[in-house]
Image (tube, rainbow, N blue to C red; front, side, top):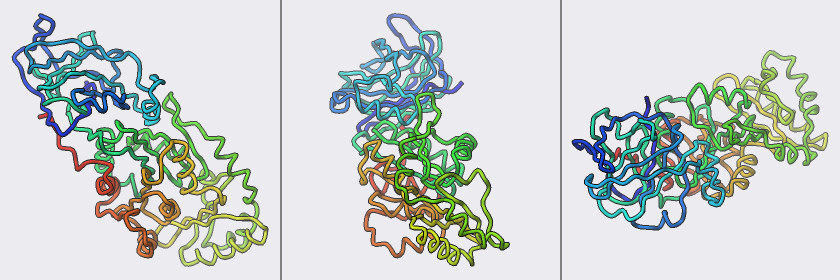
Length: 432
């Protein structure tokens, strides 16, 4: 069985799992064993806990119905019992920060303990005989921290959360950016859950894929469930619901319709002569939608096709965006409703979640990310980026706004977040 996950949130303190002969709790000698049910964490802070120098904050995710903490303030001599909140943190509606955090979709809860000044030891159990007292199945183990603060206990390992760092809205392209290196993706997931989830951060996926294809990818690659998914190059927005699924944002659709500048038929008609040639075709049906038309075009013909389609759209008094991506002999060409697109949808989602441009970081690897990276938001270009994006980047005078990572894929995202000060250097496990 996996550990119950916890998150204690900390201030520059080391943490260890300490062995003891047999922990005495409430006068009873109890033999502890590791291995609670698997759980997952997310939390927000009540203000007093965030500022109280003697408060210890423990966030956790667990499938246990209730979580009890046995703790000792004096190095394991005298033990006290504390019960967790029975409610999930996203049901605590009086705390706005926690409501925002509930968007991350991991159902974290938390415990706080006040008056922590000296080394603090604890174990967790569910009141039904299941215990989490550290990663190793040894008798008489307990977790130990050097003092108050904020930590994350996940998979039996305590790490610091650095709760004084700012929260971030991270908007990631998927294929070639977040996805593409399995080990790097797992590192990203771990670090995001250990550091970012607990201080008002939100994760959004922004992809050219359809929503069905995106959901299949999330399941296959074991990706984190994001607050929102922007699909089909910014033509659809989906919000995470309390049941863990994503629901369409009808407001975004109405916004796109209301512009009156989009006419899909003009694009299809103008493309007809090209579609008779062997170097251009419609992409499959599941890649098309009401606000975009997707073609496969041989790279040598892409500029000619864009010029002709643009002329036809303008002649009809309409507008569209033309987004080419891919490398090699064939390109994708997305012809998209003018009000849609990866950047416009990012701004829409960011405003709905209440993040400023400075608190928002977009990440990409290819030509279809250029628009998303050309707004006011900050940007990370991963180390494995395609030439189309790199050529664009060379022409930019973006100063500190854009960061070109040396590392590829998800590791490049972590590198950029560290450089921008949103996450601390790679967290060393604080518990042995």
